[in-house]
Structure formats: C-alpha cells, structure tokens
Amino acid sequence: MRISIMSMRRRPFYTLFMSAALLISLSALFLLAKHAVTQPRWLQTDDFVEYWAAGKLNIAGGNPYNPDELTPLQWKAGRFDSVPVIMYNPPWMLAIVMPFGAMDYAVGRTIWAARLRASVHWGPVRSSAL
Image (cartoon, rainbow, N blue to C red):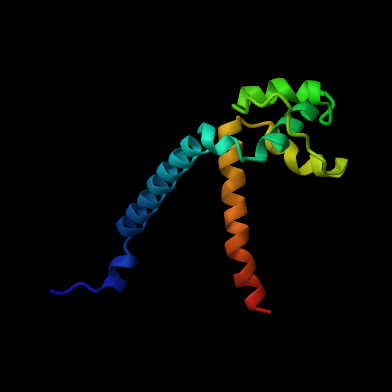
C-alpha cells in the first residue's frame, strides 16, 4: 500500500510533528543568534547599543541624550569605549526603541537583527508585487 504525501499532510500527527520541529529549529536559531550578537567583535561595529541604552534610560526616567547616563548602560551591554554612542534621532523615535530597552540586551539585539533581515527580504518581494 502506497501512502501519498498529500494524505500524510492531512494527518494530525504530521502537523504536530512539523510544528514541533519548526519550533525547535527556531528556538535553536534564536539561541545561536543571541550568543553571536554578544561577542565583542560584533559590539565594536554595532549601533543597536545606542538605541537600547536610550530606550532603557527613557523608561527609567533618565535623559536618553546624556552621555554621562549612557556610558554605564553601554558598558553593561559590552561596549567599552570611553565615548558612548549617542542616539541622534528625534524624540519620537524613542517610541520605537523603548520596547527594546525593556528587554535584556542580547534578546533585544537578536529581535532587532531578525526584524532588519526580514525587512530587507520582505521589501523587494513586496515592491515586485506593485
């Protein structure tokens, strides 16, 4: 007796198995990416730390444009430069970065990178449909 692939896809076990495999794969990918974005060589060229620190300061009621307040947060994230990177965006941009400031640096950076990559891939696909 031969079972076709289409008939297998209709079975609940197949759907459950594929969903579990996808969840495990995405979790492993997230953990690997989270580890990769906290490496010192990555942090030297990373500008996410300025958005993360500004969002975290704004949530705490601090001044997100004050270098003296940004320095300890950026050191906490792993950027050990003597001069902090300051977010030069207008204040309304804080509404976008504050959710990332509420997260741990590694988690926020991983989600930020995933969203950037998704927008780079989604943009050309979407514009080709016009």
